[in-house]
Length: 128
Image 1: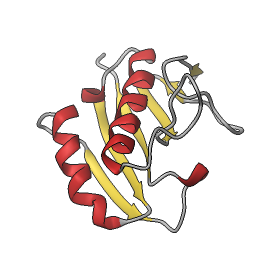
Image 2 (image 1 turned 180 degrees about the horizontal axis):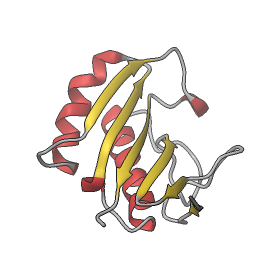
Image 3 (image 1 turned 120 degrees about the vertical axis):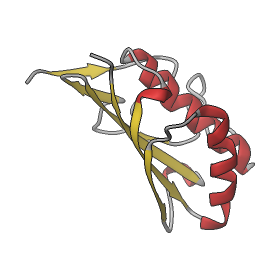
Image 4 (image 1 turned 90 degrees about the vertical axis):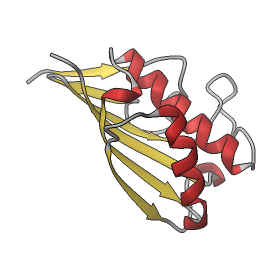
């Protein structure tokens, strides 16, 4: 199958040797997003709510560039430097997703790029 690179200026540009997303068939693999402002490429804030919302906005921008929405996500991985923020992720996620919710994993990690408190990656399947 052909791999198509997905890119948008409405999400942070890749800061390493990866693409924002890769589309294969009707499946799109979204790279991890941290709470960077796409215009300035700086961390948005130390406030965890602001960081989580920025990550969802970044993922949404990449999903849209691929021809989908957050609602097309079938698998979401959440990485947190403090699992105490997991209830906040659930609360905010309810504003971005509706049932049926995607499958999800939440993992506690020691550190994330640029000192972020949260990172998420996802797999979405576009309607045929």
